[in-house]
Image 1 (cartoon, chains in turn red, brown):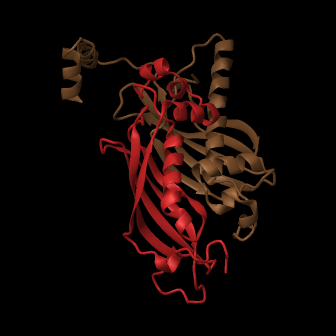
Image 2 (cartoon, chains in turn cyan, yellow):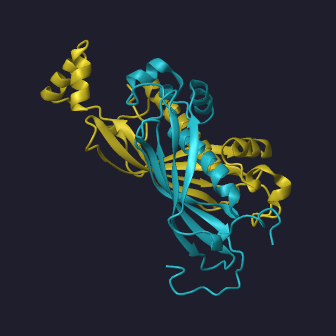
Image 3 (cartoon, one colour):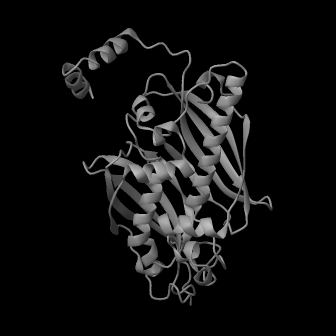
Length: 164
Length: 186
């Protein structure tokens, strides 16, 4: 038994359809510029004038920053409350609208699928649909994450359909 | 910055260089964005199936993005050096697929490579082209760290705006009335 995660929810405790509220994060100019300097130094993430002339129409966060801030909200409210074993990746990440200075992002994470690993009986895979919106309720980002999670009892045999 | 849509060659390989991940930066990124115990606490991480501290996948991906942006700036400088006018790329509409394949541990050196695998004109935004890029990261042992299928924008050099669109844009630049027109036509 992993002492770090023993008291957390495991694979067996999750159910498809569970919706997790992500709280809210307000994105400041300082946050945008600090992240962009390190990871995404396009002029439209660093400079107001360059941003106005770009497709974004004003200073906006890097899409990777929107994703990282969303991950932080997901960690605080979900991943750090379950026996997570790390991410496998994601698909269909769509940046639908720029996140501008002063915007507040929030949203939901929905447990979309659960299955057991074929090769590692102690592991399950939880699929999470993320829907991130701004303070006006407009979608800014959606994606589907796949994350590993420990089973409490790996000795339970795999049932038909548990690994579709 | 970088090349015009028309000048981008399919299957051309862009080496993006190598980044060494230190324990300090792995923990710093983890504390800010992904504070799971195996990304922030080297002692607790020993209990995980990783057996020690590993970088958040989002950290290795963010560094890969930085390497790509740096390569775009370098390509822009190269083109200007040849006396050519560079094109305009970015921002990105999304990522089709991202697979984290092998963990990144402190001291690992990760090498990033970008290949443009496809391109087409945008259906929704006139004057822009879509680029389909594969970005792969490998560690010093040649193991694949992640595989990404990214989508990017690049401006078309030879695009001529249709007269109707040019008239519409001119109208939206009018004071007061312009805002009303832009709002109504969204």
